[in-house]
Length: 119
Image 1 (cartoon, rainbow, N blue to C red):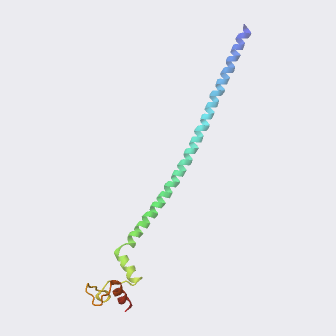
Image 2: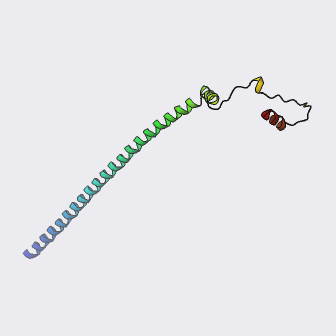
Image 3: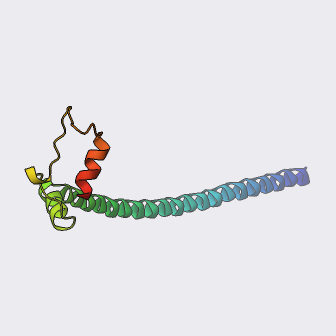
């Protein structure tokens, strides 16, 4: 009977060792998973920070362009470019063509404009 009790004790020790190895394996795997998740979270946070910086840069660029658009579309700026660069002038009686419904020559609008432009 002594050998049977020893065998039972030996089997229990083997079972206890197996359980300890399984528990240790689960703990080690859990640690690796935890470390992997932490490193993945750090990578995601770094990418987030990079995107936030890029977004701030783009927003500053948008604000700058918006102010430039506002400055360039002011009436005074448009008048200055039109008169200085393109030679445009405000209409006066000398450069206006008056059309009436009763034209003695029975000319149409296109011929009146053409004759005024080339004369």
